[in-house]
Length: 305
Ligand code: CP
Ligand code: NVA
Image 1 (tube, protein in one colour):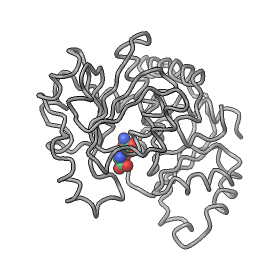
Image 2 (cartoon, rainbow, N blue to C red):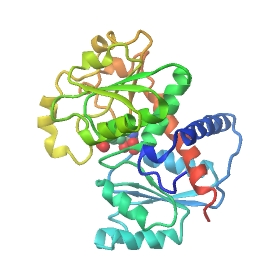
Image 3 (cartoon, helix red, strand yellow):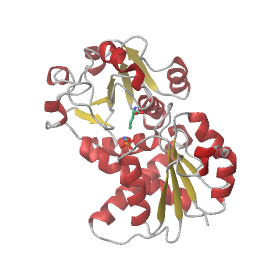
Image 4 (cartoon, protein in one colour):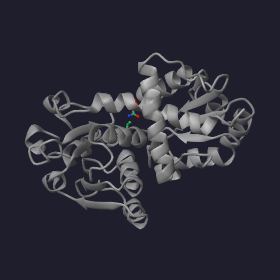
């Protein structure tokens, strides 16, 4: 396993299988009240340039479950906000903690941090990728359908950071993926080309109906990601017709499930009836962030001080 997980492709297919097996085991242990404090005494620093509910809480609770400790660091409360260089912070924190999780506006910030850190660095979301989300998503899909079914994912909406990690992950899982986004909001050619070059089975279309045809998983995310607030009105117009509704669901496989990384904006990218409906697995998906990340933390931090 690589020292740093900045992209979902920093995890190999074999490591992915191991992580999901471990995550399922950790989930069962937690449910059974069985202690699993295998990271006793280890610390994780969590740097958040942007808000978070799931990532923050699941990493913090995950470290506590594992017998370790997590520190929430808001850049405005540490010297980064007053101009201390990221490389200096990386070198200093490496002397204190066993690992670092960073959520940043720019992917380069995380890459820069990682290049100066001697302890593992995990991308907790950047403008380009959200690997921890997709690790939990793959766990959730496998829990639901088992590992042998040929799963087709339909992404409907913005070709954003979560979409990118999911596209790249098809090379690891063998799942196929069709993305439906309006022109101007489709995933970048670079990511699509990268996914294909490593064996991913991906296609990009404009019509949500084309994407969801026979799909097993219908996945969406908000239309306005963090940092894009100034484009709100433009995006609301551009994504009209890209809402996951009961009508759209009828064109997918009859036992298709609906996923959303959350937070959701009901009435925009997804209807209330769909997210609350019987095909929605979004709450299991959100829960699995905890278990999947715990497996990742055990793998990355066990050998650290
Ligand atoms: N899905 C996800 O990463 O949620 P948060 O922004 O709440 O962490
Ligand atoms: N695409 C969203 C994901 C939030 C978890 C964002 O970047 O804001």
